[in-house]
Length: 255
Image (cartoon, rainbow, N blue to C red; front, side):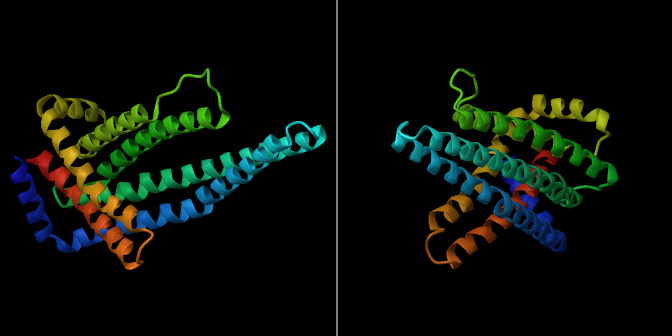
């Protein structure tokens, strides 16, 4: 089964190199879009957080010797916190839109290499991507809110459990992407049928995809402070692997 899926995926790419190239370009556009969004939102949010923490540290050093100054600095901390949340919200929206429409279109191109597609397929992909994004963003937002506000009596999922939950949600969305050629009303039934009949194989190929994606990303993170050419090579490898894992996943399910 594994050998056949890999063989079929490579044969599919060989038969339709131009479409696979288009898929890689779309993945590049997706990466570029979220990078720009992160630069203009996530980076300023981090700076606002650092500024707020700097004022907080100053208050700790002063230790109530200047009450009036503490009140002014508390206002600065509040403004920094609000600005940081605003930037994070904007970044979340921008990244979500890129994931839904650009990454969704990448899935559509990958599907077109496996089977005939239609507008219905893209609409279903957008719906699945939107649901996935909303759930994951809600988890992340809840976790960040609890962590940033320092609420200790509020119950929220530990980091490890949160990552596991996101992985499970991603698994279901991946399964959904493989069934989008059906009518929207049939998707839950088709997904459930796939999981029941081929659940062990789906989990196996999902883990294979994660490993294939993790290797170039780890290579990038471990070389980001070295020569510029090395992390750039890792990025392009990651783009190719990201495109390939979509074809592999769809080929495995079709097999």
